[in-house]
Every structure is written in C-alpha cells, then in structure tokens.
Length: 282
Image (cartoon, one colour):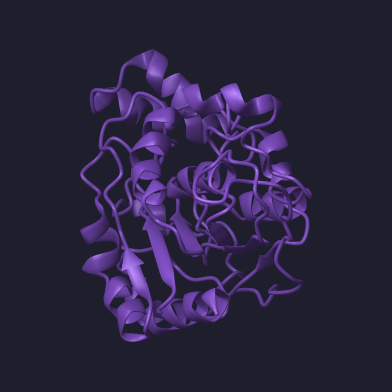
C-alpha cells in the first residue's frame, strides 16, 4: 500500500486553492509519480477562525485509518500543526514548508489591511493574525509536538489545540504572486539546497491517543517534524520563523529550502522539492 500525504495549501481570504498551489506547479503530479497517494483538499476560502479550518480538514482525516504525512505550506502550516495535534494517532510525519511569519507588527498591519479589503471582518482579521511563531498556534502547543504525550482527551480536550482556535487562519500576508513574495531579506540564503542547515532527527512524539479516532486512548507512534524554509526569505516568510520553529519543536530538523509555489521563482526547484518530500515521507 502506498503512503499517503495530505497537502495543505497556503493563502488566506483569497483565490488560492489546492490546484493552483500544488497541481499546476507540478507538485501533486511529482509526488504521485513517486508512488505516494496524494490528498490535496481545498481549505475554507473565507474562514472566521482556525477552528473552522481544523474542522473542515479534520473531516478528511477522520475517515483515514493508516498513518500519513501532512505537508503544510505558508499559512497552511498552522492548519497542519492543528491537525497533527488533534490526530496524533494518524500523523507520523509533519512537514512545515515556507511557514508564514507571525508576530511581526509591520507585516501584521499590512496583512490586516489586505484581509479587511478582501471582506474579512476586523475582529476576525485580528484573531487570524494572533500568534508569536505561527498564527493561531500557541507556543505551548508547538512545544507539545515534541513532548512524550499529546493527549487530545486530556485537560485540553475542550480546546484540543489551544484556545487560539478562535484565531482563525493565518493570512498569506503577502499575495503569493505579489512582488513582496520575491523580495529577499537574506541575500546569502540562496541556492537550491538552502543554507545547508538540515540536521538532527524528527521530533519523537510518543504517547496515548486514539486507535481509530482522536481521543480513544490507545497507543500511537512517533511524529517526525521538519521545516522547509523559503529561500530566499521574504517579508511574509522570514528566516526567524524557521529558527523559532526549530527551537520550539525539540528534535525537529531543517530540510533543503526553496522559493514557495506558485511564485515565478519556484519551477527550477520542483524536482528538489518533490525529492525532499518523498525522502522525508520514507
């Protein structure tokens, strides 16, 4: 049986969908040709909160019974983390690619303006942008990815991934196809293989969780966590976010970086990214 990969695309309150992010860029086809079973759902286009995203994609995982990998992209990294925390009995690999930067006042202000211009209510926009490292995810929940027991039926059951579920979906602060997405901040962070920081082993997350669905209390395996940086970094996907994730998630590792799709700079890196994902899954 082929291994399954769930691809969670970027974007927020815009026209981005799974086909534009993963399909037209060749990523879905490349992973399928490599023998993986690819699930690439569309995220809710105008969510009022992160809990809406988690619930929508959680329906897909609830019907899955074999271990799988989740790949989150940009703001989809938030959704990927929330799903991993809620379905630890299913998720054995978690890849956070081009994580969208949170906690940057100038970036948040610009993103908030864009969200409101696209029709997002101001209160929802504020909630969407809440976060220190990832939008909508507390530092405590990031740390839980590296603990010995993620327990969706424990004390946090009423709020499985932290009360930031009200922090809906982090915006892809800058339009993926906009000029800012290509604006480099670290001119030395270039090249197909990124800065060569790949190291260590995946975060081992072992503990009691559901057998067939979250919260039934049976044992589960380990979650290996890795991060793919945006190379070169840009205002929406900053290097500091990658470094913060590597610090917060004990045992996580960095893989080869590249520009994020579907920017014009991505196509030469398609084979590298597909190879990176396949090797991580296996």
